[in-house]
Image 1 (cartoon, rainbow, N blue to C red):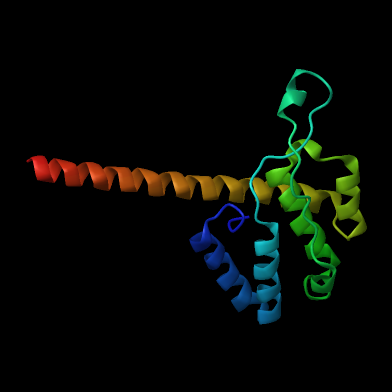
Image 2: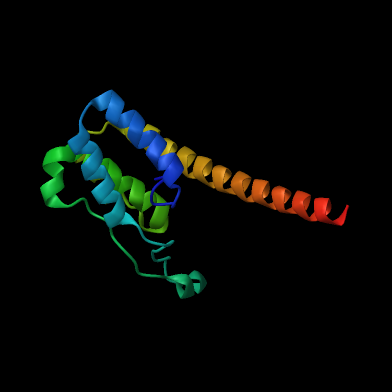
Length: 149
């Protein structure tokens, strides 16, 4: 999620942890490839018929490439697709999407935890970006004050 939000420093932190913990460079490389495939802007989706329908927007419906599922496994592939759905097309989430996770071996409790983790990481990435922007603004203000003073 950090990568699709454009936060490469955060993404590299987590990918390095995964590479060390899993010891599977092929998995990390497959994830990097899938991250590139999943990059987009959003949000996308359709509202129920009514006044908000004017905001309907079509966009990428991300699916892990079939040839990489042998590396990621069905369970991780389903998690990646679910995370992308939550970030970019949350208004399109349906019971069928939950069933896809159940079919891939996720329990109901694990689906809730996965969804909470996606939400937390999205918050974390936005917080880092906000703090970075604030820091740059403060540095610029300090530079202007130093020149004036």
